[in-house]
Amino acid sequence: MTGGADARPRVRHPLPPARWPTREEAARARLFSPLALGPLHVHERTWVPAMVPWRATDEGFVTPDVLDWYARFAEGQPGVLVVEATGIRDIPSGPLLRIGDDRFVPGLRELVEVVRERSRGRTRLFIQVIDFLTVRRRPEPATFFDRHLAVTDALRGQLALWLDDRRWREAPEREVRACLSAAERVTLETVLTDRELEALDYGYRERVWDTHLPWIRELPRVLPGLFAEAARRAREAGFDGVELHYAHAYTMASFLSRLNTRADGYGGSLAGRARLPLEVLAAVRARVGRDWVVGIRYLGDEVVAGGSRLEDAVWFGVRFAEAGVDYLSVSKGGRFEDARQPKVGEAVYPYTGESGWECMPTVWADARGPFARNAPLAAAIRAAVRAAGLTTPVVASGGIGSFALAEGLLERGDADCVAAARQTLADPDWFRKVRLGLGHLVRRCEYTNYCEGLDQRHKQVTCKLWDRDLGPGDPAVTLARDGRRRLVPPAWRPPADL
Ligand SMILES: Cc1cc2nc3c(=O)[nH]c(=O)nc-3n(C[C@H](O)[C@H](O)[C@H](O)COP(=O)(O)O)c2cc1C
Ligand code: SF4
Image (cartoon, rainbow, N blue to C red; front, side, top):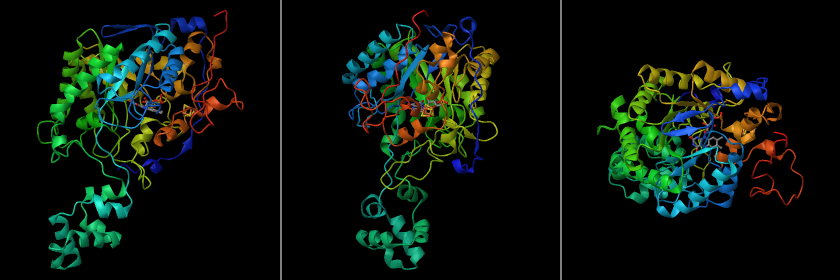
């Protein structure tokens, strides 16, 4: 634990005043200059990173709401738009997009077509592909002791020791469960293992180093094929590339983590931790070929105690670049290890602790503030990749919501592309407005994370700024399920003479 989000001194930082460029200045800006991502020409360095909007069906299919969401981002014509984290397995995972079977391809193809049309072919479209392990909701204590807890000889032994009564070594399971159900906290903290206590207090959660579980042991055998097939489907659906999700709280980031203690050659040392991520990359490349973009999103810093730091990320970045990845997109934090305890019946959410805050920093921040806060990570990775003689583009993200910040990063060589998630959510046309010299019309993100709160509760993600001009009962406006919020940002048309 790093002390949790509350340990942070909370000072509200005002939005930095924005100086927007004229149209002529914008035309000369690096932000609006082209670049090559491997085999792909990208018309400008503006980037919308993956954001889960909770709009798929419970079976993981594309819906009309998913199409509207990406169509609206496409209207802003960013250089790159990355579709939300999409599951590579054919298992139920709630209203998250899935790509674990060919039956998902037609819906995804429709998504590709809508983005091509609305961006007038200007926006390159990638899809982020993800694997995650089991995370269960925090149980009612009675249910946990009745059903979930495994009554083992070790547990009986601990109980006998703590209660100083040998009879517990032979006690029937029913009695052990009843005893623990009525026990005081101190007893539970003494007789349960750390993982059992965690399952009680936070909900059961698997780790990639739980190699006593056969399906976890087998991950290195299974994942390269699953990722490769997902990438093959993405190519068939017409995407311009795939982004391997090696960031935040999920399986591949956990392989890279310093916390990964696997002893089977897929953990421990830097090389051991990078082994599966590199094997997945190789399998994906072998399936889709060299003429199609394969990128990686990963962490510049895990921000949790004992986790990977920038020096690990620099080493991984150079290995990924040597292995031929087409871009590196750098994120930060977003881990389970320091997440807040969920309420009973809810699942732990990896963006509630310090590491989660660093992933999506708000204006309530320490002296460094939230703006472009994570750019030094991208800069260090990029410098190491360049020092190794490689030209792999690096994408920075985190609190970048103005032209000056974005252009400054590019000018200094801290990054090759600039990703903006929440600013683009607040105003999907913001890049376009800046390009047209209409920066003063940008609806600026306030970085107070109303949207992230919705994501946390698995509610349809919207921005609080969209509803300011929401009149009652406008039939042209699609509303969220609660009937109170716009589901799509207000429309914007550039003046006719532009
Ligand atoms: C609602 C929401 C959903 C997100 N979903 C994803 C995701 O699916 N994959 C991912 O890599 N990052 C995800 N992120 C993180 C963003 O891509 C981005 O890294 C983060 O918000 C920091 O950038 P920003 O300051 O420009 O918002 C999400 C962020 C938000 C606000
Ligand atoms: S809800 Fe708040 S933090 Fe999220 S995009 Fe809108 S203004 Fe930004």
